[in-house]
Image (cartoon, rainbow, N blue to C red; front, top):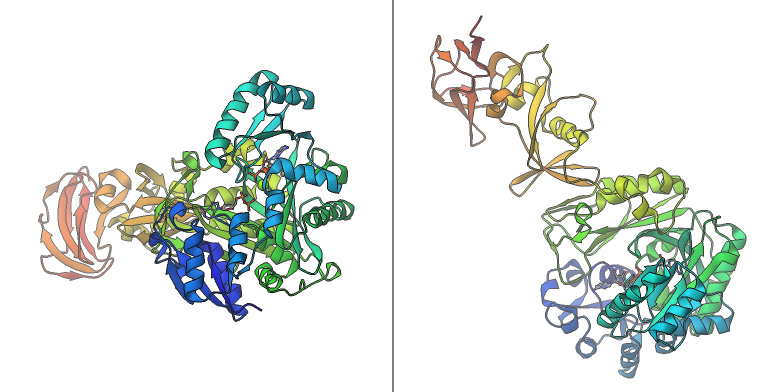
Length: 622
Ligand code: ADP
Ligand code: ADP
Ligand code: MG
């Protein structure tokens, strides 16, 4: 077994790998960029080496610097995580050439699966069903269009070197093909340095089904069942689960066998994923699932597989890389329960899902479930890297229970001032169609209206704000606004939510969110959303917020520091009567309406306890 490991990655996956390495007694070395120096993964590793400035091209992607760091720290092995250099065959070779152990896929497998067209051809030879389409050399636009016409619309143009959901264009009509091809080639050239494309039939009712595979150096290959990653936004995974809803035993056996066959075809060693696209318009069927691509690395969503199989896939990786056989045979693996993972992103769904980077002044993630995160409260989401904040992973005996747990977990997320997709995730996980297992890759787009939260506070949010702002206690109303409300009257309060000022009638049955002071702001956290709120002040209320019987009560214990009126004085609504100093703040007590000061029980310098009646104004017409 290797005794030391350098992790050529950052954030949550670096921490995830450190966790298992520590459990196995393996010393860990982190490499990091300047801006990541204070990140948890750097602190948690036994040793850390700074390898350059923030841009990944100057740090996490510089092979020589990583190899140098391994040498300097005496690390025996390198784990690439996912992204970055994980699927870089030259790096895999360079690591081994340096006499180090590569905890990734073999260079020859990475190469064989690196380009989607070559991979598909290889799979055809291996007898694995592939998505129908064109994957030839001839890249002449007229030829490509003729192929698309032959395949039949809709088709999907894909960059052969593509990844991460980029470099894809769906084309619905022949006349749109030429433009879509040009824009796809442009994106492919700039993102992947390769403008070659392939064309696939666009599968209807598409579901993304993938199979976790594992190989060792002794010729064993097993699968660890399937995951369903159909909940996607712009071809990028948002919620993943295992097993796949609606998968019967025969279909599972077929797709998992195809995956093992695919892995064997490239002499696979280590953790890998075979991605399939399924036409689920009539449910999952073995003859309607096709190979799409292979990801030759540990996948972001590997925890759901760990959850249902009870295995630690990073431990498997480290054992296999050390030359051990696979920890389990196929017969020793089985599915237990249901797991779901949601990717919590620093992005603003109400603003076209634009990334939202910046400080994490508040970051509270749900307890009692598995949370894989790379950041902590007080840290930040850097604009240089992937804006994922955390993966929320739940396990339950059944799918509906897992969905409920996930919805609840997402709803409990508290992040500020960075915006997140937590509310969106909570809504998606609680959506009746999702709960019923009616998922495909178009789910999010189809239901955007009900999944994407609005920027304007709803009546329910205003209610929750009013409720939350009301302090606990019998005479909460008085404590809130500084005078006793007319019991018979409707209790209304002026609240300001996200800059919108509203007069809200208090409904005792309304849901109350959690109120938190974050920096200089007061935030209401409810259902995964964060709303800046302003506590109503006495002068707000005096300005018309509530109906009062005219009694002004001390909202909290304090000292009277000014009295501007005497008994019998005529006062007008909103006029300042006296000032109380409480908790280092001055609070003006105002006349709730036009009238006469009928009682005055306050003198300058006097200490008052909470609830003391300081003055009473009698209505003018009384
Ligand atoms: P998956 O199928 O697991 O979602 P993709 O093929 O979509 O993976 O993308 C590769 C993975 O690498 C993504 O999950 C993405 O978050 C991650 N990734 C991409 N760029 C970076 C980066 N700069 N830093 C860390 N991770 C990254
Ligand atoms: P990437 O390398 O970016 O992950 P993939 O080939 O895995 O690219 O495709 C990404 C996503 O695009 C899939 O998960 C699926 O939602 C969608 N997709 C890919 N191919 C097809 C297809 N032929 N028909 C319908 N949807 C597809
Ligand atoms: Mg993919």
